[in-house]
Length: 131
Image (cartoon, rainbow, N blue to C red; front, side, top):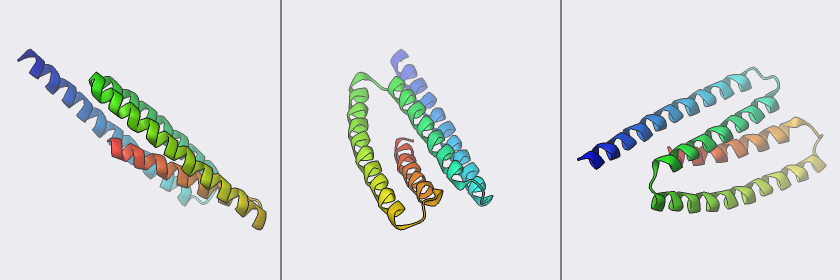
């Protein structure tokens, strides 16, 4: 009975954290859209959004690890390693594409902003899957 209560408590805590993380994600998205809507310093908007998403992802992973048993921690860790490898590959392709674009267009922050936005979307996708 005691173990059942403990398991229920862990589930409720992780569910509450998930809801809090989802609310934080929604807030970040809303703030990002408002920042972009101002049509000023859009690259800075994208960089801040990316950093905030990355931080939220790291915090979410730490919370998940602490709430799982050893077997599930290992499974999540393996999944995260695979995801990180795919992320690095995807980011490398994006950076290569932007580098090529800089050779054909005026160098500005538009390409970098779009690149950062795509990277943020990739992180957001992982974060959403974890929540």
